[in-house]
Image (cartoon, rainbow, N blue to C red; front, side):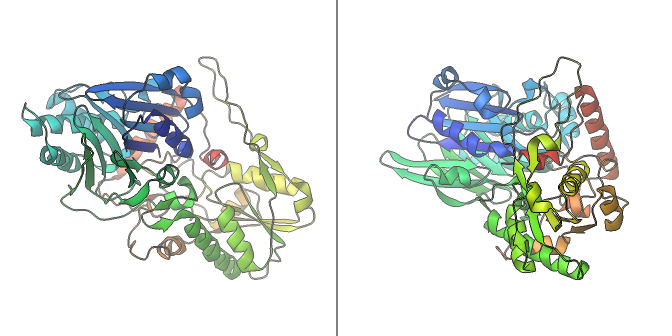
Length: 504
């Protein structure tokens, strides 16, 4: 889960890229970067931290040019604390190329070996995004045959990227002296949309992870980039598009609609806000079926992503909707000395309970998901301390039982609360009177009701079905070992449910 932007404009793009990253900040808070282009010269600034912390006025002044890409990073592969893995990445051979990537390759280790042994390219970081960049650079070199590039050769290179790379990837890139390139994996797992704006100097184009980045700058959405498709805007401002994958099927990550995306975004023809309202309706019907005798006095969301679902649940159940938790939006960062473990911030630092809303009430708390359960347990305890008589806990998503390998850093299966437990056992673990999960069929229907053309979704963390067809038990075990080692080396103890408390 990262945020990417690519802009072709008729005026300097540095401010637009910066503002666009702020709109996509929820997709990645670990690092940020911007690269702009003046003819064949790239200008780059990137670093660890939030967008507002990475860029200063002097940095923005050093980013001239009318074409650019930007990236905000949420670490999924590689070390979370390595500032060298901030994107975009750059290579200078055979052409100057910069690339920003949202997603995760599932065959990056095999590709690294190919890069070293066959393509004679060296990978400097643990990031699969650098692997993807080098695959693209190598395929462009082969397509150019030592001379020059044209649109056909660029699309041929992307076709070979699809042939070699597995997993999820939405990409924005610039090729020095040629233009702006964007493409999406053959399953469309991670989102990518592009829009157009008319100016007196000619059309401008913007590609981004979410439609909010287009709306803010007056770009009219053209459409989502299709699975396996590439779009290329040359230096004259001419748009070229091509389906580059031999086979493609649209199977977007359903967790985007549950949690990752902003509610005001539209992705693959689906209003995220409307989908979340539908999730609330389906979940309310599940509550009525499973808890017919529960006398629920009110529905309370865990801010912020579960609000639409909670509001719709309250309406369907015919009970009050209340804001029982207030978020502190100004929690400072954790400062550590080298070798000191990163401490988990308490949920109580991030959420404050409105005691008057809970006293002597039977309350239904709604969250977008339950991952490890530690945050859920703390929230239930806060409600009980505030005087709640009964506390029911509902999840707008189904039980998370499997690892996600397509760009969401889920915990290992051993750390998840759901595997091997019934709903009743999970309720006891988080100290709730009952836990109600969304059914996967209900979740899919909630999204499909907004866009009936969506026939398939990437649902692996709920179902264990991996749409790319190349994820084996051995691969999952290697991912778990890598994540365990990374967290151990970084001194981290990160609860995936903390994502919910950081989401804007």
